[in-house]
Amino acid sequence: MLRAVTSASNIHRRLLCPGSEKLETGLPDEDSIQSKEGDLLHAYDANPDLVRAVLKPQQQNLLRISAELDEIIFDLTREKFSITESEPFEEGRETTLIAMEGTDSETPGHCDRWRLYPALSLLIIIDKKFGFKEVTPASSNPQLRTYAIGGYEKWAPENIVVAITQPRLEYERRLTMACYTAKDIEFARAELSSIRAASRRDDAPLVPGEEQCRYCKAKLICKAYRAKVQEGMEIIPRVEGSVAKREESAAQSLALCTDDQLSHVLVAIKFAEFLKDAAREEGRKRVAAGRLTNWEVGKEKETNTITSPRIAIGLLAMGKFMTREEILDCSMEMHLGPIIEKHREKMMAQGKKCTWKDAKEQVHEALSSVIQKGTQRPALTMKKK
Image (cartoon, rainbow, N blue to C red; front, side):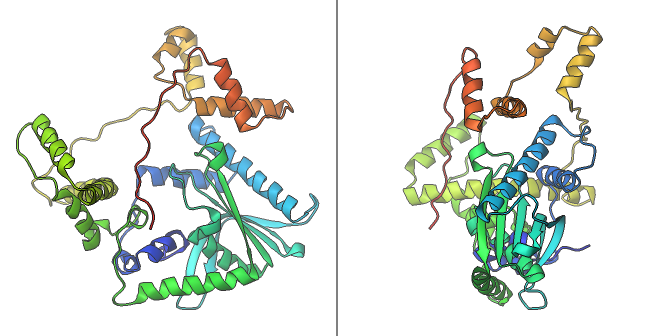
């Protein structure tokens, strides 16, 4: 089944870069390692009865958190609209919602979960993000707004609650929610119609930017994107010689840059990062097809990953390969996040009230003798105009 060129998931890209629709038309979808894992997690989330023992512990944990966030959304909605536990509802997962169906602005979307309270004319739509990057909150997210339009046109509810969950983020940032009324839908429809009309224009402009270029399929053929990269890279003169000599020359050139020039260089670096994986994958395809003859592809390397550290420790200990202490010495590092999550989960199972903040403080206190505090360099991002 072919995906629509423009859908709820990329409507934000059309808003920021109207010309991206024409440029992406006919291009295949990109498959990265991250997107494949996202597809896997969405598949398991949509089918709770599937056996999850084959998944990595971290993946199982993400699915558990995702399910917990769903219940928090339902609880908060019941509280806001005074809904009783016995109130009848209908629900589904992985459902296509089409906004403005049958018009020039028809835009399909694929929501992860929905729940409808028919007697109360209330719809809940949940979108799950399993990636690492924090997305635009539900209140101003064009994808969720498009889902809201599609949900309204399918069921005509008086109120629509939309929510985004991000299980990988810190506890306080995992959930955002918003509510739409029928009046809000009118404005949302007008906005969507305007975005789609702008994308259909023959002179629809290509507007490069971090948000719209990150997942655009047309980066390799986009002149505007390429110009942004070249604009920054041309500021730094190319020097032949050793790596050390080139690094020294680049550092000297950067120190002499004006603020405006350095800004162009920073943008070019960011954009080049988006291009890196796509360019390498395209290169592999062309070499395999007998093209790009001045490049070659190395041999595939077999990877081996321990999917369950707990079982692996037991097997090694039972086989007398080494003691549990020796096994633990082989572990590279421990992450505080999963430990805090597990501690909170155990406290809650015992009927004890334990917020994520409480669990974090308790774990940090218990491990204070082996926790080394440090600082991470702050992110450098361009201000939004």
